[in-house]
Length: 365
Length: 215
Image (cartoon, rainbow over all chains, first blue to last red; front, side, top):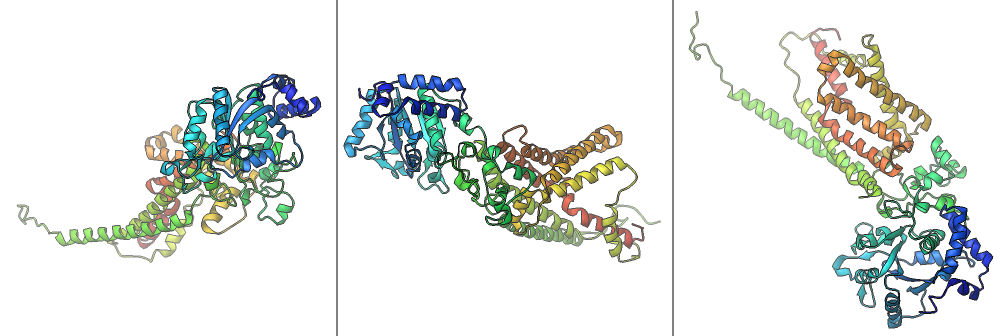
């Protein structure tokens, strides 16, 4: 492990990363996280001095989209530089080793860096039927998470599956999928939701953890710097929403004019993420800019929020059917009630006995 | 439960319970009222009462010079509520989803205008209920309850749209929950008048007509 723990300055030089590229990375990360300009210099200074941080990346019930997001760039991107600042000791998709050798690498890293390593998790954890729905080297995801989390300094839950359960948790949740924070309660957990998360958000948070520690988080454990605003707050189509100008279909005049996609099911108003500002593919675009509403993928249970093409103001389920059923039941109960009233009234009339004055002891004059 | 789970609950199970209680309750009440039948006329019937019944439905909607301020305020918030409920664009989406019928909503600034006006008018009706000694004595808890459950959706909807108070997701959830409270209250409070006012007026008008009383 000594190679992994050497200072970064030499390591970067060895990889041919120039000081200019390195500073550009730090400035980009600091600016993405809305830190002060001085913080970029401080980040650069700290990053070159730190020992390479050991990171164990566990992939559970996931689709590898999060890893794809952070690694798939059309050219060596600033985002990919983060892999030079960390020692990625275990990662299914990226590691060369397999089988026992891979598991040994994980155990070695856990042993050598006990209490210091960062645990990155992508994917949800199945609990149903003893967690048999996802196992690695014969070990359930639940057991592996508990084992690795024990010695971790902090946990980063990457993607909506690890952060909130994501797609595997979607109704009817056949595997009993849960998030990392549903299981681990005694370690700091940073949630970076998204399906997948934006690459610069992942690297920005990791850079922050390496240099300044855990960033400020919201009530769902998300870094406020990236998840503080909603897509709607920062959407360039917001003025159309405010004026009530909405596209009615994906190819009508409103859509061509770039009007708001609220009526087409955009979940931007309730989705916290940085897509509208940081954007995707090196800042090229984001879903709304390409003409499709936000799916709300960085929010819990986005898969069960009533349909991607239904406005947020609609109900989840079938309100029309409930109303029809209730109407029929109400009518039946009303008729039954009317019948009972009629029976009671008839009975009262039938049982009615006329009382004369004589019956009451009086006499007619 | 986080805010998005609260919102999803309000849009899902919450809406289901509220819809079922409201529709079941209102249908039951209408059937019960209709099954009571008409009181037996002991005197000679002087007309069918049909035209008087219809006349009463519309006549009771006309403003009266008495208490004109209060009546104007009532008009404003009743009309305002109708406009807001049926013509705010997100609401039209809701109705389209439920009934499959779509009509165009009105611009947001028009809805905003009606909302502010309706909130002010409702505040006026509440203050006048406190200030006027007669109305204060006549007012019961049920009157204040009806006011509160009608007022809450208005004010929470306004706050959600303008991003006031809490974050939008929570405020939207609170707004939908307040609407559900209103829906549940409809069959069990004075607010039933929202659907029974026409038949109640018709009954009064036609009874008057049958007895030869001018409506």
